[in-house]
Image 1 (tube, rainbow, N blue to C red):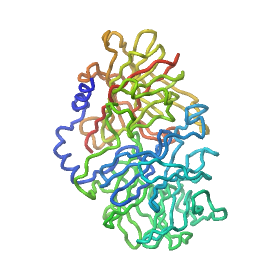
Image 2 (image 1 turned 45 degrees about the vertical axis):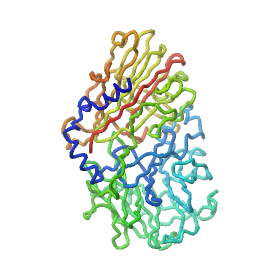
Image 3 (image 1 turned 180 degrees about the vertical axis):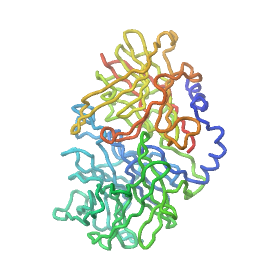
Length: 560
């Protein structure tokens, strides 16, 4: 079966992609240029550092576990996930989908640093009370293992900063956290807590900054301090932008400069990120952009020091379509991957929705398959434990699974979803002794404070009986979701604007569309605050004890 599914993955024409005719051009482009977006997937709130010849990036994944993914690259083009800063959060049953949820909360805007031969990461979950305490982690290697150094009061969108000599001398200095809108506190040298009495407001927001300033990233260059922040400015003719505050002393006084105010690729103006240098002394900016259903994507651009300011973009101050890679010949890597589940350990490209129930999944009970077992009874996908996710990617992508549903019990629901606060799902449902396949639109409403699931909706668009289609000796079915995140002006072969289509197959070759045509994939910061994910799920609505086996997940994306 795996060979058949792999062969199906290669039949890209059935996915609606015109990849073959673009193959030669793509092969040339990928060896010569970085195509923006650098990562056309949900990778928000980046912090990027360089250690030797390797760049390390950390991003926000909120309620997904493990959390705070660490990615690395040699060329700022090919990225791979190499570890996570923590496996799970345990401060509240909400992380276990009990007494509420952590949708849109959890890990936010981690700050990554390298100091005296160790990696450090500071993050503050976007929660209230003790759940929002700031964590500081440390590790000898970016891949981990990471250990908790300390916990302290909440700091919003903060930057950890070791005030070192920025020349050859890397001697220890004082340590700070910069957070909120220009607030600073000094930390104890051992990072165990803040030093009381050191709080400062290092600058006052100017009159033209009507929106929130956040996303602090502090660096030191040529003896000066630079604080990069996103500015949400809503005055007529003004846009979202990246600003920089500069001072000769970390405590101020600071002066301000707008360093990027640019739309890109038919989408909105972009901001929030950081800058990083190369071994040769060049500088780059890595900034995210909101792109609707796919989430918040990463772009890379030159950073030119002009009059002592790190100006971002091309010679016109705009985000460029392409950037020259730093080095050539690097192996092609990606943060989203196919998986045949032949390993006894789950790949780093996967994340669970909330903390997993470890007793309810396995890669070893049936070697070569992912087994998802129902654990307790729920009435909605949004409270189902052990939904396994990967990002969707632009400009277009396709994800498919081969699912063995022979061990499902009455009331079980299992399948593949375009998972978000508004979800398009392919669900196999067991009713009595019969199986049905449904394509449905599902929605969730959450309370503001505890993210309790207050209401769910499920609108079945199409339902077909499976029992008559499956053979007595096989209860396996292929499910596939194709997604298109191209802006409308870039339409070539399929409609764009965050659309998905759903398919099933009995052999992995001939596919039948099911359900709504061009389901809209949305982004809602008030609920999930994340881009759409592929989600593999299995849950019980009547009695626990059933399970499914996933033979393989096949992922394909089209060239940018």
